[in-house]
Amino acid sequence: MLDIRALRKTFGAVEVLKGIDLKVARQELVFIIGPSGSGKSTLLRCMNRLEEPSDGSIFVDGVDLLSPKTDINLMRRKLGMVFQSFNLYPHKNALGNVTLALRKVLRKSAAEAEAIAMAALDRVGLKEKAGNFPSQLSGGQQQRVAIARAIALEPTVLLFDEPTSALDPELAGSVLAAMGDLKKAGMTMVVVSHEMRFARDFADRVVFMENGEVVQDGPPAVLFGPDAHPRVKAFLSELS
Ligand code: ADP
Ligand code: MG
Image 1: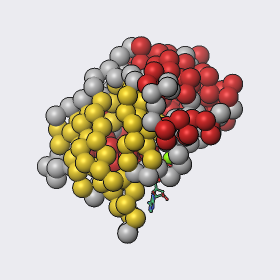
Image 2: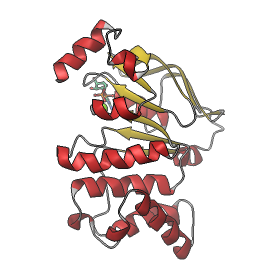
Image 3: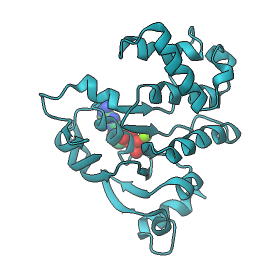
């Protein structure tokens, strides 16, 4: 589904990604951890070309993402992204925030967009809040609207960059539950987060990054167990 090879990214003289190899299979949830500044966000941003990689290749469903012939707008649609800050339009209600992209990007009719958006809001448990404006929603509910907005476009892969780190723990729970439901429904996901319990419960693989490199890539039982790389163990013990 997603095949990243020898991916490099430099900002000026600083090499932030130093040759990343990462594969994500269909319906897999790959969880990325690592210290602040290790390049996790840059990697996700390269995956939908919000950042232009300096070298290497990214294939999505067999399509060369970095080829000049590739329709980048089409590919961005296939790579849905959910950020730490939800970026909802404050003057649009939950439904309006989800229908906007369906109308503008997919050119759906108003009625069709509304039906798809309501189904997406239902999947994140917010059907009853469709008429609420962001200011009338908790942070966790706002983030779930952002997730609904992403899934409404039917992405092949959903990328999450610290989706709960702006939320109080009690609000993060509802977002993690919605993400767990998506995983159970077969969504392919790449999640950058510090929610290790979620990783234990839902990740197929955990990838530990440090200084722009993948230090270890394996099942949660390995990275959270006695066979973890010493750097992984050190990182996890600092967190707790
Ligand atoms: P993480 O998400 O793991 O905390 P980032 O990918 O945000 O790490 O950042 C990795 C490194 O790249 C950091 O040292 C950061 O300062 C640097 N960086 C990120 N974006 C830019 C940019 N646009 N220009 C220059 N340096 C950047
Ligand atoms: Mg980051």
